[in-house]
Amino acid sequence: MADILVSTNSCTIRCQEHLDDEFENDNMFDCVSCNTLREKAGKYQTHHHTATCVKKGKVINIKKNEGFGRFDGYGAGEELNNLTVCRFTFPRYPLDKTKLISGVSKDTDEEIIKTRKQTLRKIVTYLIRQSLDAEKFNSLQKLTFIEFLFEIGMFDTIKNVNEFTSKEKEAAKQKYLNALSVSFSGKARVFSKRRVQDIFVNGYNNKLMQIFQANHDL
Image (cartoon, rainbow, N blue to C red; front, side, top):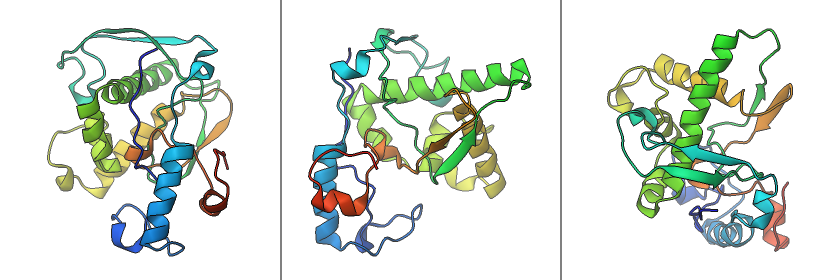
């Protein structure tokens, strides 16, 4: 299985000096605690593919013109064959807020499902291709959520990200959420808030991470 790059600096804690405008302030931690937690998250909560990830034996093939998001069909790269799909679903999908997403109902039109699956494939192949290249992965980690939506082709028009209206941003996000609705089986699934740079960070509890020096999933 190809090695997928991960960040050892990812964490979901924001101290007062390191806020961005996508996330609310968390006053539980000062800068020292934030840095300590970031180190622990990198050591204990960052996902690394192992033999356990490949037990289901599911693979994906990415064509030469896939994995480029909004440039799918135009970009050209190496064809990636027989990449093992991680059974723990890493890389995870970025999201600006924790969201309960309903699955598709039995009476959903087949054309709608087909379109959503095509969009989902665009998202998945983009995340995988970017994760396999150090330079591309570094650029990916710098994206805000809205910039990520733009790069994977969720907007209907091409212009500067800052020029999109709130309505256009909401429509792009809804298109993204619709695609995620066909990524699982069942009636619904909770998708956690996750920055783009945290797509390989397993969910954890901030307070437990301070005292429980091991991987946990809470």
